[in-house]
Image (cartoon, rainbow over the protein chains, first blue to last red):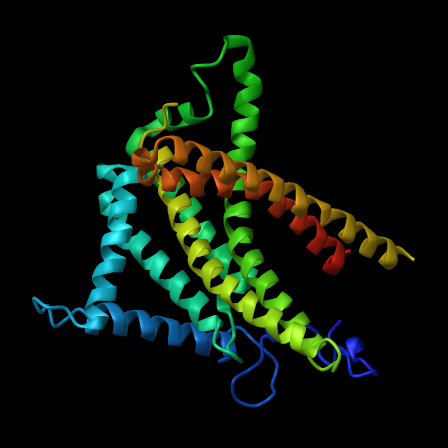
Length: 251
Length: 74
C-alpha cells in the first residue's frame, strides 16, 4: 500500500498514510510486543507533559498563579464541572479517571500536531483500549451499584408494553456498539485530518497549485487544532454520559 | 477485479460521511436558532449540543468503518 504510490510527475511522492507507520525507535528490527517504537516515545512524551503540567505546574500553589498553574487549574475546573453537570454529583469519585482520560487524549492530540510528530491517538489500537476501558468500567460500576436493576437500562418502562421487547433489542445493540463508535470517532477524526494535511502537502510539490495547497494546509492545521480539542472533549463527555447511565439506569 | 470493486464500495461508503454532515448541521443549526431565541439559557446547553453532535456523527463513523474495512480488510 505504501510503496506503490510513488508519483513520477512530481505529484504525490509519499503516501498520505505513511505517517501512521509504527517503526522501532532504535534500529530497523521487527516490531514485537516490547519493542520501543515511535508510539512508545510519543506516549511517554505525552505522559511526561501531563505530569509536568499538572504536578509540577500546580505545585507552587501561589495566590497569583503562574502560567502553568493557570492552565492546570483551568483544566481541573473544566473537567470537574463537566463531570458534575453531566454525570451528577455521585459520579465525582470517578473524576480522577475522567481527568486522566481527558488530559492524556488532549495532550496526545496536540503533540501529534507538531510537524513530524506521531499522533498516537490516531491509531485504533490506542483509542480502542481507552474506549474498552471506559466500557468495562461503566458496565462493572453499573452492576456493582445497581445489581440486576442495571438491566432496567434496556427495558424502556415509559414505552408501551408491546413495544418494549423491540426497544430492548435496540437498546442492547446500541449499548454494545458504544465502544466501537466511541473509539473510532477519536481515531478516525484525527487520522482523517492528518491524512488530509498530507494529501495537500503532496500537491505542494506541483508548482501551479503550490500556493493554494500551502494555504489549504494552514487552514486544515487550524481546523485540526480545533478538532484535537473537541474530540478529546467529546470523548470525555461521552464517558460522563455512559457513567450517568451506569449510576442511574432508569430511563 | 474484486479489489477494484472494494475501492468503489469504499467510495460509496464515503457518502455516509456526507449524511452524517447533514445530521451534525441539523443539530448545530437548531441549537443556534434556539440559542438566539433564549441566549441566557444557551451556555448551560453546550454539553447537550456536543452530545447530540456525537450521536449524530456515530452513524457517519460506521460508514467510515465500512470504507476502512473495504480498503484494508477485503
